[in-house]
Length: 254
Image (cartoon, rainbow, N blue to C red; front, side):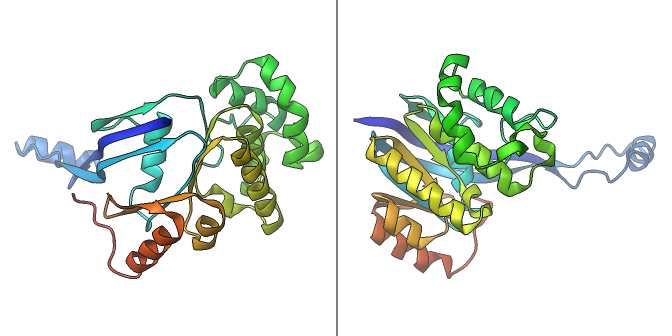
């Protein structure tokens, strides 16, 4: 049974180019009756992507930098909306996409557990039930009572991962933030991910690590030049990724 359906999805971002470099330039051009405010450009992030993910699947998404992997996860999580196409998600999502996302810098780690859980749609009762495991897994000790603006990137990963994986969300999205943590904590995270997968949680992992995909994923989706070029067996997907990562670069046009 599919729980995520991505249908003909494209995502474009618009931006101004050749715009005036200062207010003085704008005023001088206006006095000269030269109204040049630059031109609107389109940056293509994804083009006509379609796939379905079934409940309990562990899917690795691979691609070169700039291919559109992180944009895809943000579309699935609802942070972005597609320019065209549609995305349907049937179950609750816990995204671990960006360091510090969903955290308030001036609040303590402890307070941010409740804030982040609320953003993910979990009430106080559910958060309190998961709190002991979150605190234990994060290994932050008394630093949990410090404002997160004083946290290192590794500490943010520890807290964010602990929250995302110990609440009862059936779908977990993980971007490459795990690469920030130390090797020991990475192994601990992978062990936890395996535990969740054994409980039929649906997991999507963005990574550049061929070994991580081969060892942990059931399936691999490869994105190159903003399009899906492979969707299938994890080992075959890694080979496709390795062939493409050694040639060319991603273009911003579709």
